[in-house]
Amino acid sequence: MADLFTIENLGNLLMLCFLQAVLGFDNLLYISIESQRAPVAQQKAVRFWGIIMAVTLRVVLLFVMINLIESLSDPFFTFAWSGVLEGAVNFATIIFIVGGVFIIYTAVKEISHMLSVDHLDHDIEGKSGKSGLQVVMLIVMMNLIFSFDSILSALAITDVFPILAAAILISGAAMLVLADGVTAFLEKNRMYEVLGLFILLIVGVVLLGEAGVAAAHAMHDDTLGLKIFGYPLIPMSKTTFYFAVIVLFAVEILQSGYAKKLDAERRAEQSHHG
Image (tube, one colour):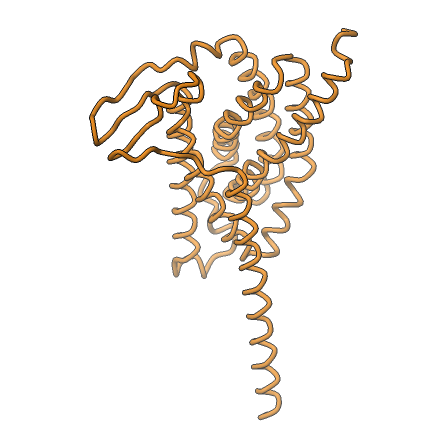
C-alpha cells in the first residue's frame, strides 16, 4: 500500500484527473442533454444513477482492458479493396464507429426536433418520449463509449490500477456535482442546448476519425490506418476540437448580444412612435 503513495503516482493521479476533466466535457454535455428526455420528475435521479452506474462500469472496463489490452488491440480484419477501402479493424475501431454514428444520429434527430413546428407547441415535458430507465441505459452505454479513448489515454500514462480507478472515481464525483448545474443552465438558456447539440455532432465526427487510426495506433503501424478512396481517415486533434467549441460559443454570445440590441432598438422605436 505504501508503494502507491509515491511522488510519481501522485503526479500521475493529478495528470489523470486533469485528463479526465478535459476528455469528460463532451460526456457531461451529453448526460445533461439526454437526461432532459426523461420525465421531468425523474431527471435528477436519472442523472445521478446514470453517472453512478457509468462510473462503476468504467472501473470494470478499465480492469478488463488492463488484462486484455493486447487481445483488444490486435486487428481481427483487414480491408484490402485497393483504392476504395483499405486498412485494419480492431475492437476499438468498432466501438468508435458505433459511438460516432449513434451520437451523430442523436444530435441530428434532436436538432430536427427542435426545428419542427410541433416543438414550438410543447415545453420540455413534451419532448420526453423515453422512460427514466431507458435514458439511464443510454447514458451508461454512451459513457462507456466516451470512456474508451480516455481509458486508452490514461493507460499511456500509468498502468497502476488503483491510481487509474481513483482518477475515474474523482471525475465521476465531479460529474455528479456539475451535472445538475449544467442541465439547469441549458434549461434557462435554451439557445445553448442547440449549441450543445452541434458540439455533440462534432464529437461524433471526432469519434469516427478515431476509428480510422485505432488499429494503427494500437499496433504502432501507420499502414494499418483506414483509407477511404485512397484518403486516410484522420482524427481531429483535441486542440482543433476545443478551438471549434470556443468559436461556436463566441458566435452564439455575439449573436445573442446582437439580437438583444436589435430587440431593444425596436422597442425603443415603437415606444417613440407610440
